[in-house]
Length: 99
Image 1 (cartoon, helix red, strand yellow):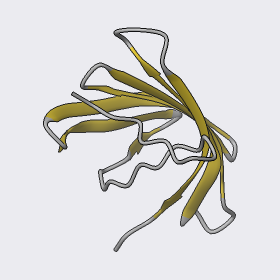
Image 2 (tube, rainbow, N blue to C red):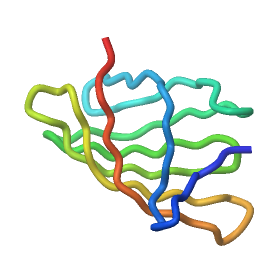
Image 3 (tube, helix red, strand yellow):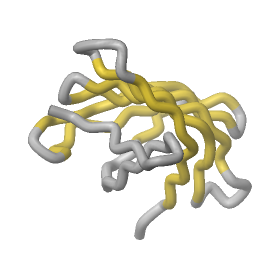
Image 4 (cartoon, helix red, strand yellow):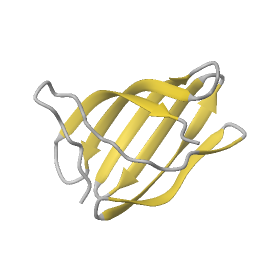
């Protein structure tokens, strides 16, 4: 099962690596292994704004963020929800391009 790790101050703590692919204004995260489940995602880009939903292991995480001028960093807010009940978590995220 997936996990939204939450710290004592209520912030999500998730660390993983995956591939983000852009084709026009559409973005996707191809299926990848995370913990003991497979996850993937899809969304859109408009100007320097990104909206993406990643799903896997009974978890849905929605991301809304801003792409940096050089395209190497995306920062924003995330909302995690467990499909099996009312558990949710909100947090901030930073994605960094890896070479």
